[in-house]
Image (tube, rainbow, N blue to C red):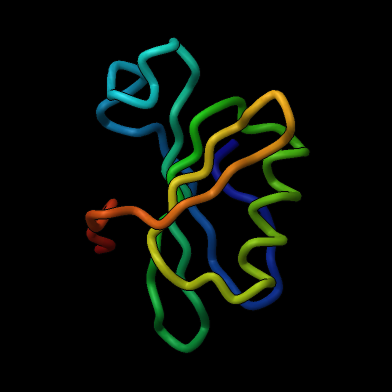
Length: 94
């Protein structure tokens, strides 16, 4: 999956360059960067640890719709998803 639709945002998905070898991806789960560009020019990134399926896309859309406009880490857990603010900028948008 390279993108998914959203009314007010352009979304691009790419594998994390660090892959699943990073600290939170050490369990072998895939890691994706979800680059988001708002129509007003805001740019931010969500880093998803886990399978990028319809449940993950639905969750990401709900986070965007809740006006969470910053770099965030999203992790799939046994109970659903957990989200926290990233301590560093995840990706510089070009």
